[in-house]
Length: 328
Image (tube, rainbow, N blue to C red; front, side, top):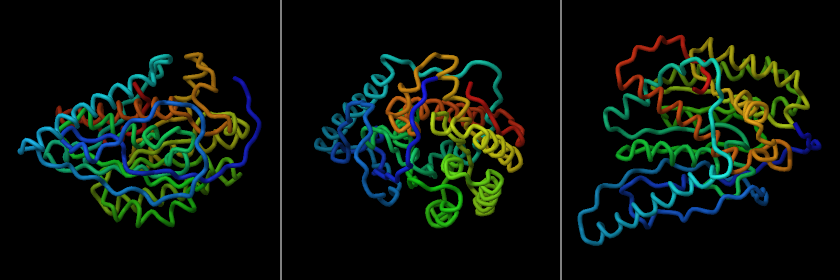
């Protein structure tokens, strides 16, 4: 693996609302997809997380039918954009032994009942999308686009609550207002990278995350998936601390019976088993993902969410204690 020089972590939040629209949303709300690129954007102040969007009703007037046609064309354009980013390097899941993710009962029950689904992406700069060429290409927006394509009649909102430079101590201060008070059906909590970079005790981070999960679960009605640190030169320079963090977050997920997306393992597979150069998925700072990295991360995460929801909808009885998983 090629190595990159150490860097200073910077805060960056460019987190507008998800760029991909539901199938019947008027075109006046649509964004034009940006072209994929790997260059990092200029640093900008952190904005407040976006509010969940709402599905609009089906068009009825001639003007509305015209808007619907334009919205359908826009969805097709976005779908093509999602495919184009993998045209040179495909996004393939890791091979080998894997566990079932378990179930996402709250998300599944909302989809079955035709009720709105709210997902909160909670984390730091790799949730906010530092390194992406456009907000459209951060992972929460990519994930929203994928889920809306798969469930075209559903009202699905993905709220980006990522703040660059934070880890568990700072995240706990906004857990109530930006997560619990939103009453999400699913929380995807990306945590641990900045703790490794700041030489924080992994055990302290794991304890805070466990406390946070307990608070979310006590509020009720929410599925939870943890996302561990990324495989990158900056993280690998602190290999021992990173290894402890990944192990402890896995233990917390097993203890609290929540899912965990093994981002480190997935990204390592890209490089070591799929022979993808690190520079193909990490930007020049040696830490943050680029458009391809975010897109593949979102694709694999979305595939597992769809698979887990499908188990519930098909009536598959997944044991509650089977929650930690490896992407299929």
